[in-house]
Length: 250
Image 1 (cartoon, rainbow, N blue to C red):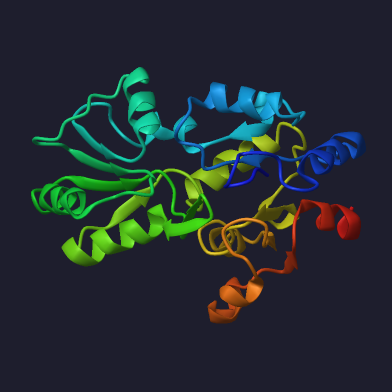
Image 2: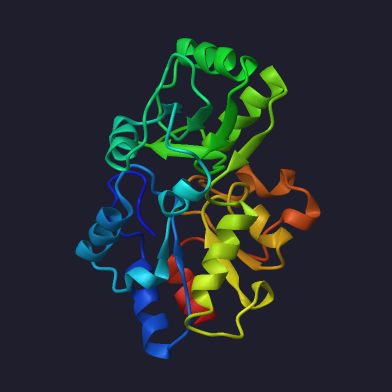
């Protein structure tokens, strides 16, 4: 929906939501926002032209309290993420944490990885805010939260949980909210749109959703990633951006 470069709406994104509103097609905006409070990020999206209600919005922070206790959390990610956790009442602990909580930033360093590994080997649980494959910023691409979780799991044999996409709990919460718009809605009725064909769309397909991969974000072309995917996880449709989906599908 928004550019990884300057956070402006990508081509056709605002018009796409407007069309859904006009045709009264039920939808949910499911984001990986972890830097701003949920209400603040919702208001930001509204301020740049998106017209939708808060009831049609879901991000990982809205499920965090039901997944991670607030005491003794060693959190890693952008400074804005850490500040948001504190405002939510989380007690950050980098001595004897119960939970290692991973979000995204572009400049993780080896000392942070070493600290996380020590905490995990000492008994802390591992939780990711989401499971993105790639993090794109300033026209560079970095390992996403999913890639970091896999690194830590391989290093320590500690399995991990995911709060946001593509966890079943997150998608089931989105479905329950969607049912407030259409009580008969089911995963088989839903088409999931994302620029993260591994971190978002794979989990959606496993739940029975149709998927649309847009190449206006993390990946420059479908050839970069789609040929290497397992056949059952390949997207159903591929478009350049939301404008093209609007033109050809709606």
